[in-house]
Amino acid sequence: MTDQQPPKLIPPHGGYKNLQSYQMSEIVYDATVVFCDRFISKRSRTHDQMVQAARSGKQNHAHGVTEACMASGTCSGCL
Image (tube, rainbow, N blue to C red; front, side):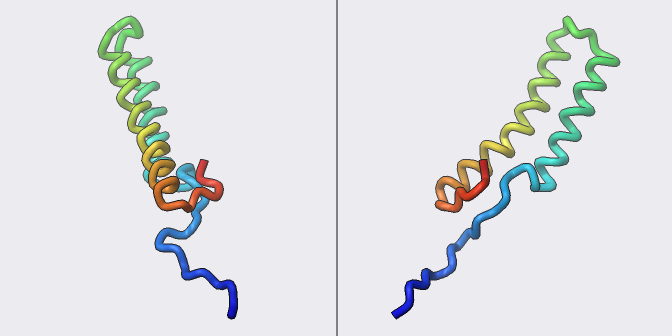
């Protein structure tokens, strides 16, 4: 008999930073910061809310991928 295991449903992957959606969310975050710094007063609540929303979108990608890989048991290198 051999010690071969069946292939996993979700194979190990390289992490969230390689995902196109995460890379796009970084671009959106960076553009939002530049836009807010240029056109909205830094003391404004709107400025803070827009930057925070863009940051949250970026972090949600990282958190979602980490949760999915931990649940599936394929955490080799996703963090």
